[in-house]
Length: 367
Image (cartoon, rainbow, N blue to C red; front, side):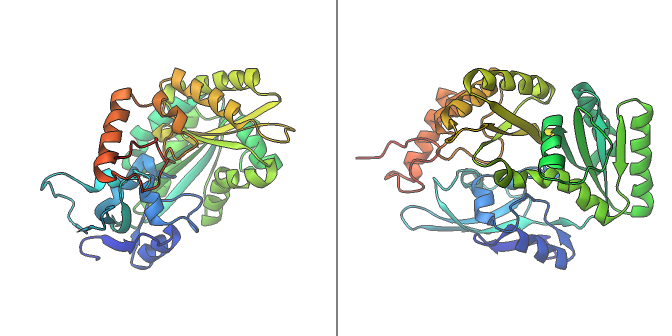
């Protein structure tokens, strides 16, 4: 619906198909993640997916205007609303987005499309300290404003694995303690391209950036993002490992990595970990493992990481949900009162506990 700037899709539609359809219609779907070719929009909404451009466009729920879903008694709720303003009673769709399929089965959705960007500019920056990283984030928000679409940070340990172990080409000379990928989406390359270049130069002059490569082509953009997407190769390069998706206060992220490495070293023999993520929206990813272990001590690794998250006032899940593996640690992020309310909602909508049983928490089933 071009007039409403919406697209109505079935829940099983792959994200990449949706992105391509929007592009062909002259629009843009901002939700984007590495699994775009295989993940389905119903799953994206079930976990309230985030991805690469949350700093500008928000989480998946920000893109949903309408939703159709089935309740446990077979009732089909069709509310394929296309209006941005609709305050007629409770916004019921928000219950089901992020509920991991435990409250109802999503069947269709109405997505907000965005205008297609007129141009995209990016820079890959080498940084000397985390304090400089945080200062650059603030400067990007002020200097680029709503054009800022991504702010990805990679610690030196991640950068080594991406460029040496995986073999992605490094766009900047190094080494540096931190690397930042900044992306800006503008309207007109003739105006916004020079504006982005001038802003990057101003950060050099301010002493925040040690080195940087600025995109000059779509090939450069792809090369910059290849450094961040190299994590998709870690499974084949590292072998069995444990991946984490956590949220933390931005100012505390580097302190967290130091504390987390120390706790992993105490608990896990031959511990190894790397850190990276969507720092602009408070989301840190990390991969951890015991080098040389025949079987990874998953419970010890998870306990070490999530206890550190709890100590830093973070969340055990920033965008991937709770499922089964994070269920024992939900109380590190949510209060007993919040979990009790979640149980009451679950019991009201799924009294027999038949929807995605065992996920998020163990439901109390009616006898």
